[in-house]
Length: 235
Image (cartoon, rainbow, N blue to C red; front, side):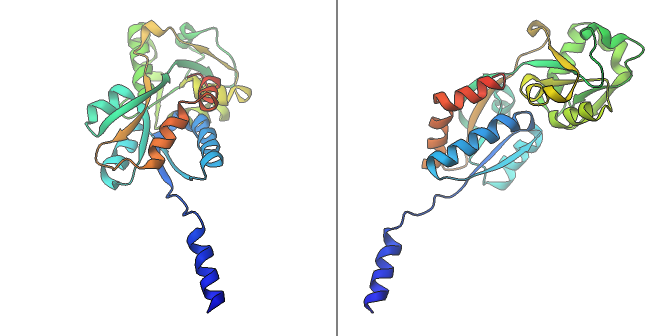
């Protein structure tokens, strides 16, 4: 009996493991967020379950599952959905043109007959696909390159095609381009005036009770260590 009492006392004295956080995010921010999640878990002991996809997938997961605690995505896109109560700015996204097997002499080279395949994320589902479409239209290049465009689902898929040499060039966010810089022929940042720069935020779903862990993560991602990771990846 005494042993049982001791075991019970020890069990009750142990801290309860915090429920994992489920955070859904745009696929183009997988690399910095994965680093931040790991640092948060080391600091707090709270595990992060990560979901990455295009923003339509992220919204569907948030709306249909009822389990998503936090979302990382583009502010205007998330606000339009009506699914969120508030958000916290993480940074401003930047569009780049990245090159596969050989470096081009800037975005005007997309009209070169030797360039036959240009990848971009799906403009209907991914914020950088929308930004790429805006860029091509505002720069006047769209009529000359529209037949070369290859629509892919997410930013990381464009990256994978660039690395494999399947496309000559592709539109990415600078975050993903930095992550694959040693595997491609380079990239150029595109003029910010030719597309609407996405404001990237951490958003709180309005139909999901905000837990202590969610508040802790929101505080953590605003601290110097997490900010340094975001800055290193171009945010």
